[in-house]
Image (cartoon, rainbow, N blue to C red; front, side, top):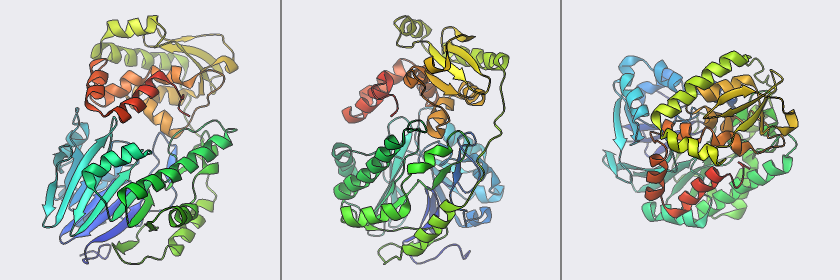
Amino acid sequence: MNKFFLLTPPVITFVNHASIIFSYDKINLITDPWLFGSVFNNSWDLVSESKMKIQDFDNITHIWFSHEHPDHFYPPVLSSIPEDTRKKITVLFQNTLDHRVAIKCKELGFSVIEMKHNQLYKLANNFQVKCRPYLLYDSLLYLQIENKKILNLNDCGVDSLRQAEYIHKITGDVDLLLTQFGYAAHIGDPDDVELRKIASKEKLMRIKIQSNVFNSKYVIPFASFIRFSHEDNIYMNDQVNKIRTVEEFIKQETNSIPVILYPGDKWILGENNENIKAIEFYEKDFSKKFEPFKNSPKIEFQELQNYSNIYTKKIRDRNNWTLIKFFHSISFLKTAKIYLKDLDLSITFDLVHGINKSKFSKNESDIIIDSDSLAFAFKFDYGADTLLANARFHKSGGRTMIFFRQFMIGTLNNNGRTFPFGIIGFLLRERSMWKSLFVEAILGNYDFE
């Protein structure tokens, strides 16, 4: 057995960010392995270096992915695993409409279990897991290991008593809660410092709500060990929650015991853990100087127009085009005003007319971005979702939601849903509390702030 693992069950090994290894008996289940590399179009990097190496996957029996965001599902890590090793590993993933992650993993040689919602899966004696989807693409993992109950919420934004109590009906009280502690998407422009302070406080209050409802004895704050690492988003680091602050908050505001783990740290669930060393390591890593990514390619207008034409054709082919044109005519899918700062160019975009040059001023735009980010949004169905996460845009004087609403249908398509039936099916299936979040985003009531 590789020294990276311990045999004493149940053991928690922290890998990095949202990646944890749960070890019991002969099972070593790793979650969301992002070990290296920049993600979200060269915009996020890990704060600390991973200790786990690719060869350590030789001892892994299962991989669970919460969702398809690259800080959770990172194909370069998977393709780096030797082919013979992949054949011995079973991937666990929620049963999605498009089965895209499952198909990709099967192509790489992994065995795959597409987990039905809320169904317990027995991996070994006294080791069972259950997956529950959250909103469009995220999911949570519930584990029963020996006599311990563990809930991994990762990025699931369970931020109200009502949401937490609903999930509690599925899980009951848990011994260990793992949850995100920092913001992970665009929060204001550089001058909007107060917005980011509020967002960080809200993340702490989420932990309090979750800890109280799930009555968790321990809390591992994780899934936020990232640095905004592009010249366009580096300002976002100014108000992120520091791990020392998070530990103090959990101690003072909840009945849970905080467990802070640094990459490579192991903890036997239920034992005492000294947090100070891990905290100091994180503080040292976060204070290190780093050079933000600056060399984004400049995409000329003609190429952007080609990308736009391809994107709008895909939308026409996969969705109800008559209804899309109707929503454009009543200004729900209103033409967006975009200022491309690297080209010093004003353009408009909507699904009916594509992109066109215009003459409005920078201050009249709905969004300020660079040509690389716009090209990314056109090239990939998840491109606009990436733009939200990487925060490489400014709001200007318009409404950012006008821009993102143009890509809402592509985001639905990326999750195996079509317009309008995908929205209807989602709203019929989901509980009202999550419906309201979805509808609010569509209507733009808070404009992503």
